[in-house]
Length: 88
Image 1 (cartoon, rainbow, N blue to C red):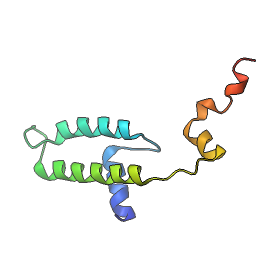
Image 2 (cartoon, rainbow, N blue to C red):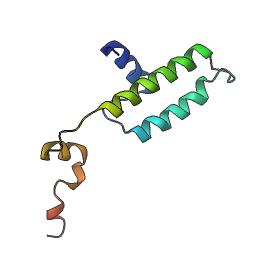
Image 3 (cartoon, rainbow, N blue to C red):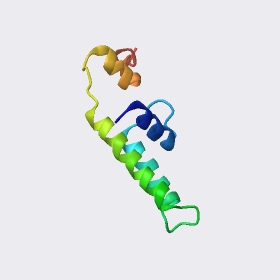
């Protein structure tokens, strides 16, 4: 995988900043219905490109490693960064 291929896959799914694997799968299912060769706007080429992009992004998500430090936690779960102040 190179960055251009990665960027093309991200653009195909319309990912602007962040997404989860669950959201990626939902977008994939929606787009696969749109681009399926049996659909009026579908084509086998676009459908295969979508599948390749989905596989590439899933591999990227599965291979991502986390640092498990406080800053990473704040970045991943911003709502819980001030949980101690909720009861005050």
